[in-house]
Image (cartoon, rainbow, N blue to C red; front, side):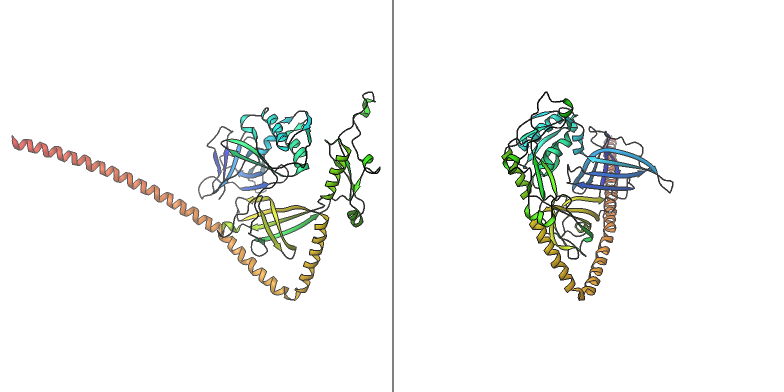
Length: 470
């Protein structure tokens, strides 16, 4: 189902097939594809080969490129990042190759000092990419694509020295959120910076249907009930001892906030007590603006991070009524024994290319406000009461779930055989086509012989006629 191809370098357009999904051709020992939207969204592909694979001991880091494709097209393209050779406990020699997608090219360039000035998000990202492109080879150049992330007001933006990838993460992603999506068009790479990504699907991830196992995690480690907003560095006296200049005072809000340098959420303090943290707004010099932005941050603070981890059966491979689960799309997640129904985004998708029907997903990472936390807590209590009320029927429900789970396992087991049958039919068609071509060539040869014989007969007939005349 998945074909893995390695290219010698960016100029190589043919490549070598490292893993062929059909019964013929080269094979990998393992292959794990991890597609991600987290942070910079750099996806990875790790595979292993043995000494029988023609690529064994021939791959080169950084230079080689690798693609992973299925019937619908290319899923991954990146460079070889790491190679390791091991001998397992059976005495077999295995080579493991880790690849990172093309967004990793942003780690190959650095940014120089850029003076702060009022710029839109699009203008700032464009300047960063221009500086990147001035330093790297043609195939690593990345051009500005679609930008839908915006800021609520005009903001001073600038950068210090550092890797391009780190500057983008620190100056844009960590402050404004959004998704970095790299796409290829006409042989060029374009970077989109999108406020929203993916669509909402009606295909559920549901226990005993396609949800094989799941866990739900709530993290409140980022909770702050009181914040200290700080702005841009203040100017210091040049005659001050140079040793103290490494620590500069910053713009704070005491003079516009009744002498207090902090802002707090009374309801959060009442519930959780004082948990104070510093929030940095490095480009703000006006104290009133700093206070307002700090209050906005506090009001919109997301204090809970909810994440689901799930092992899912890819029913779209078995039944066309189900869609293939896509990275970035949102799906209804329903497991009443863990929580009520939620619609959450797939932010990671892990595929074992040798067992494509079973995938692992990270879904959610949605952060909730305090009011949402209260509703969630109430909902969890109601769900628990509902489970207690229905405890008498639990035996029947569990038996039913077990039966459905067994049926799901049986359906899943069919997929490799189904794929093998398809591959065998494909090979058979290729063989039949080859046989037909051979038969066609044989007929053409026979036709040529018949034509030659007919020509000779005509010549003989003409000769006999001439002899008869004499």
